[in-house]
Structures are given as C-alpha cells and as structure tokens.
Length: 249
Image (cartoon, rainbow, N blue to C red; front, side):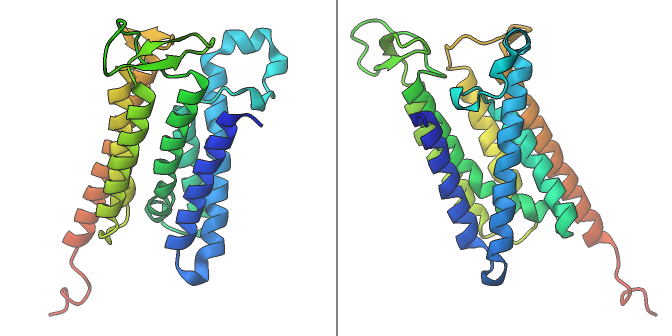
C-alpha cells in the first residue's frame, strides 16, 4: 500500500472515530456502519468520476480500470457518492436525510486534510513555479517527480481546511436544527475547493477558460446553497402551519 492510500485511510479512520464518539451510546454501531457505507460509496463515486474525466485513457487501457492501488480518484465524485449514500441509508433506516448528513459531515474535515497532505507527498495539486529566492516558496515535486520552488498550495490548503472546517463544526454543534450543520460544513468545503482551484498549477482539462475542478467547485457550492434554501423554506413552512390545538375554537 502506498503512502497516499495510507494517508487517506488515516483520515477516514479519524472520521469514523468522530462519528462513533458523537453518536448516542445505544446507536453507535448503527452510525458506525452508516459511516463505513458512506465512505464506500464516496470511494466508488470518486473512482467513477475520475474514470469519466479520463475516458480516453481508460478506453485504451481498460485493464487499469480495476487497478485501484495506482490512484485515480476525484473529490467531486466522492461528494456525489457521499450524498447518494446518505439518501439511501436514510431511506433504509427511515431516518431524516438531513440527520444522516449532519452526522456524516464530520468525515469531511479529516478526509480533506488527509487528501491535501497526500497530494503534497505525491506531487499532485501543486502550485505554480516561483522565481529562485522567493522566501515564501517551498520545494515541491510534481506528478513526474521534478522538484522546484513552488507556491505552497497543498500545505496551505491542508492547514486552512483543518482550521475552517473544524471551527465550522464546533460552531454548528450548538445547532439543534436538522441539516444546518451539514449545510454549513458543506458550504465551507465547497468555498475552500473553489478558492484553491485557482491556485493550482497542475495540468487539467479546461472548459470555457476555467479548470474543470473550478466548475465542479461552483456546481457543488450552488447545489449546497440550494439544499440550504430548500431546508430553510421547509422549516419555515412547518413553523408557519398552525397546529390542531390552535385550530380549536
């Protein structure tokens, strides 16, 4: 197993421990199993989206489709798998999807930090090259192993993700409104991905002048904001509906 996989596995383990500790004592096993299922679907989604983004390669080298140890995962697919599994497990267990998302969103911070640190170690998602002597630069390798002075995108992203996502989690732990925690954490995550997509210099496909990961960050942010709005409207309508007691003369 390579270092990249070990780092991602470590982040996933931290996330599962957080789910276990934050779950009610008599339901810990249930939420732990849900967390494992969410991780599995997120992994499958990440692999699927990566293969679709590199369809020409995988159509030519079909034997590499199941070569999971070589890497090849995309965070956007992980988010799709994350949401799909939350909806599915919510339906199966007859639990509110927003409650499932609230409990599972604690996976996002450790996995995001682990992914950026793994990218740093593997020469992925690196920053642009800098002039020799730039004091704030860092010697970083790219995907082919060439080391150069570059903008320290990966370590900066890892530290900022840990800071902002952890603070958001802590702040939203005080909220007892279903869906608020997942919405806030998801929004911060999407904004973080969007900002750092503009800092990356690794080669990637472009569309209408923007990187594909920039577009995916925008779509994710819009989707999360839409879900927050729908959840807000739903709660507002419920609160505005008079109960049966109020209707008694």
